[in-house]
Image 1 (cartoon, helix red, strand yellow):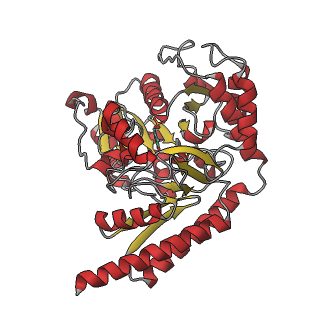
Image 2 (spheres, rainbow, N blue to C red):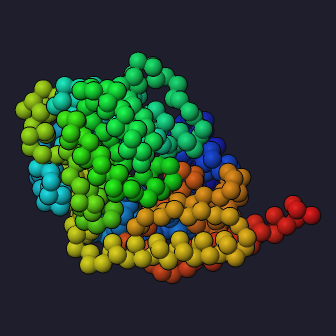
Length: 422
Ligand SMILES: *Cc1c(COP(=O)(O)O)cnc(C)c1O
């Protein structure tokens, strides 16, 4: 057994399923999961020093690639002054100012330590502001692991085939109304049925947790007008999309102003973070100014805030980074489809800007392709339901290397299909 395999055997002894988050276990594709020791640029290395082109990128957070020298340098010098004090600090103020400047429709922000917390905070705030209880969310959208948001929630639940999460009392989800994405009549019907009871509509502006879901901007605009009409808040969960497509929110990209926006992942470049933000009027309802309580020991941690600050500075100063990752992604997706077609393999590639997801005819086919790619040093998201990402560190030659590997994998799968048919 190689070193990575030995480590995973040990991991299984002490961690549940050898992991701290289910999708990491590769349950969908089977076999041993990847354990990563280090990363540089768009490459990661396992414990046997095998190298992979990384499209997982810390589940979207590592948009600059791994070990960006500017981020590392600033963090090294920051870390000498202590790890955290549980008080407000300068980096936190600067990061807040930078995000508020980048997203014109928000005045104030609250930092937390994960996307889950960000969404929980935003929903609580929406309920506190409106005095209403119910929220509308969409089938297969993922908003973190709060009890009442795990209903039909995509992501790891879809990957593992968990229809309803055990341990969530029915009482806890009775205020969550789940409707199909894109179905404005279902949203209208919910507002009618639960008149004056709906506090908020919660939506991922670009779905990233049931494969990549290309946005329906008309529908999102419809949500804006329906929420306004019914005095409910519109919450954009931009934990993935914030700072992913341009230097700011996806909401601006679509020229829509939600009342609250949730951020995470990218805004600390891969360190644990979440944030929610909105107008001063709404945000001031939070304690200590208002009566909606939310607190945390680790919020605004100076190391995390410094990482976010440098990451966002790098993104802001990059001249064409966003355009480059969009173009590279189009090139990659176009050629993946072409090569699959050439080998007679049915493959659906969903992509938007710098995100993509892959879907084969069956889970078995996906798993086979996945293993063949991993063997050749390409690390894709280990489920059809998780999104893949491009980083500013990916180059055309990394993409070409991936395409060569994909072509080999498709050819191999084509041969295996032929053998089965005879
Ligand atoms: C990842 C994610 C979350 C949860 O964030 P965590 O940091 O994992 O708690 C929430 N919403 C969306 C859209 C996400 O992709």
